[in-house]
Image (tube, rainbow, N blue to C red; front, side, top):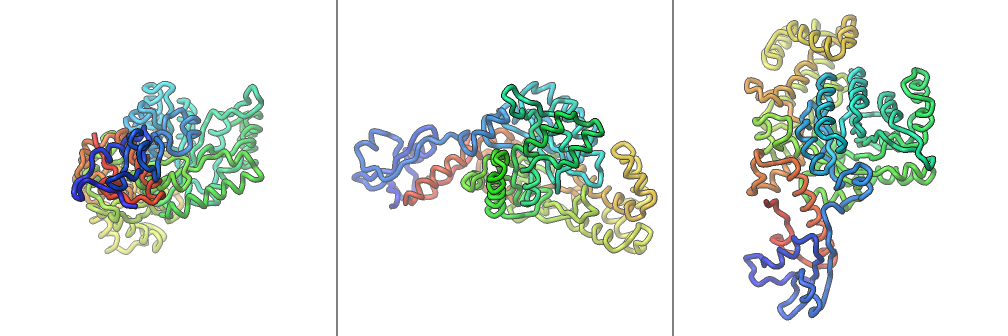
Length: 517
């Protein structure tokens, strides 16, 4: 059946209003003029009703358990973006509006993380927010420093990302928030949202903490005997975010494959361990439009997490120049490049390709690292080229800066490199990889071609969706409004899908939700 319209060139305002009124039901009816849509129950009563959809509040999408557990109003989260791009201002704005957001602590020195969390606690009081804890195999002191800061400032939720397995620091955080309730059940005071893309990693977070790690922490006095006992009675995570094709660290897996797969792992484990069945599975990566959000919820996501699109919002800790670059990106303007924090392992991150040469320059550094055993082994012409086009200074002075930087951040790195020329080379190359994102954040004009901007295809999809609306300008993209427009549009898209499933063919003028004030 095809929707009837008074004209074939202009939308019927009443039909558009009925579809947009998410608080009221909508009926598809057949009357004298053919098939139409109405929100008027009187019209529905005197017509032949073909299909109907009920009210659908944006806050009702996903699993209500997520919102109830975290003390927020919707199954929507603004995920962490490293180097403080998910800034104090961004987290505070989302928290005040009733949404969960995670501070981007990855890559930030412990003293700055400590100050940020202290400020958020002061500003927000008991309003819920989260902090990112990123796995740092090359710099374990950073992981411990972030956990220490979270414990010190009473952060009740962490977003654990880039973990390949459960670590002692994560177990320490989890265990220290556990106690026995009056009914004998375990009360979870420290919540963990694990961001994963692989089934074996998801399985580790669906199970309790490894006994060996728990015992090591107990013997060392890091956790009490009771905490050691309780942490083996709960899964390591309360929520698992399935990360698909996202900005930054990503396996670029399709969400339609990864999300059902990890939901199936959860359900399989729940047969023998009912506690695993309580873990909610959410979705991240590629979510930048209402259609993408609605699709994630339709696939079974308990909640959704956005990332790339929040970088171009007013509150994000990014420079105006970078936000303008992001606001012009298309969905294909991304590339993979070596990561700074896992450079030696060959791990890559997804970055913006448009307007920057970072990806190609970073790749040349990694290829040099693989080919040679030390800085001194690099042929003179290649070294000169790197110093001129990438570093813009001699490598000896770069090393001097590395020594000063790691003396504050993680002195063990300098100690380890003293007798390991290959390690020293990695730290020198990571100087460029690390500063490239700092140049982007600061808007360093002399380094514009070296900006490292973590970005996934969701950014381009978002730009296409908001083109021609007030959100086209990054200066008008408030992070809370972006969240609310996407959730509202997702609810609209979900109702449209239900009508289409009933056989109704809706013209695009009625089916598409556009951002509006």
